[in-house]
Image 1 (cartoon, rainbow, N blue to C red):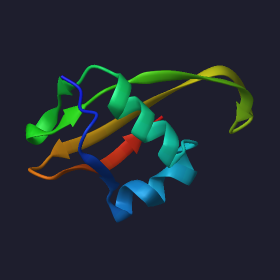
Image 2 (image 1 turned 90 degrees about the vertical axis):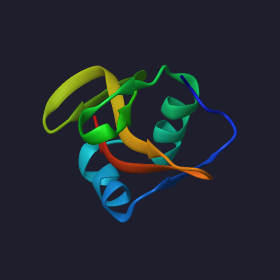
Image 3 (image 1 turned 30 degrees about the horizontal axis):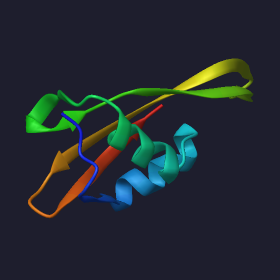
Image 4 (image 1 turned 180 degrees about the vertical axis):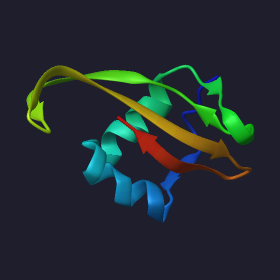
Length: 85
């Protein structure tokens, strides 16, 4: 299941983790809007999307990065709890 209507809001923790993990808010929103959702732990949802990266991260070269937001769908919005890359 995917959603294109609800607002997507990142929690403070999720925003903080973006820089540490090498993703952007735009990456997260695009992933949620265009990828299939799956059940995650604790009643949450997750999805994944690969992005062209072609850069170095922590001293290692990577051609792609995979963004995996963990989120909950609430009545009026989608709240991103954390983001893995």
